[in-house]
Amino acid sequence: MSKFFKVLEKLPYRIYMILTRPERFFKKIVVDGSLEESMVKAFLFGLFGGAALLVIGLIGAGTVGFWDVVIKLALYPPIAVGVLFVFAGLMMLFSEVAGGTRDWEIAVKGVSSLFFMYPAILVLDALAFSCWSLWIINMVVDGYLLFLIYNVARHCMNAKKKRVLVVIAGAAAALIMLYGSNYRFMWLSLKNPTAAMACIA
Image (cartoon, rainbow, N blue to C red; front, side, top):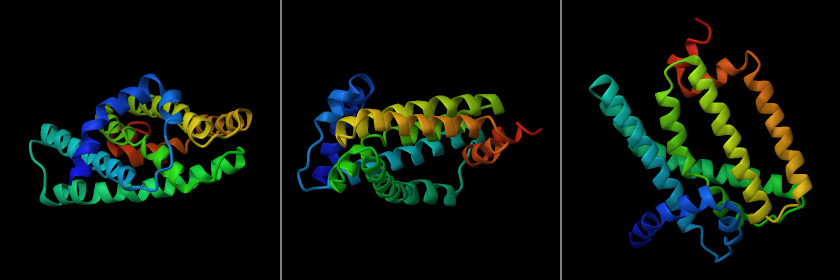
């Protein structure tokens, strides 16, 4: 429990550093043999995201169901931890392609530092009031995530700059094609079905 509160206490400063000095922040991530803090961060941000959605649902509908509470508060946190390990594996693959390290612990720590975006994404998607607002929100958020992923790959995984830029550029091109095609409706409907349906209304 002490680890839980220590992580919680440090979160505001770490988020501030990621937002203002990402290169400096990610360069300071080192191997210490423990993944506990990274898992706690993912769990906390999953909890924050679920709680925020409950508050938005309560404000909008005036009530929330029992299963809404169970799903968002009991399932979102462990799902976030699972997603952390999946994306850490993808980060290791990315790093290998870009000539960086294949250290699992560094990958988990680097990716877990991005999880402050998880509740923000959930809330922004839920607040989207139209097709265009949902589209713009996701374009901006995905672009910023690519910027953060670049920093993790370069300064945390020590990948080669040119290779990282090539991969990031390819991912950006794929996103642009996705958001410019009809397939974007399926993707956006996973984020906010009501706002996404306005795209085809």
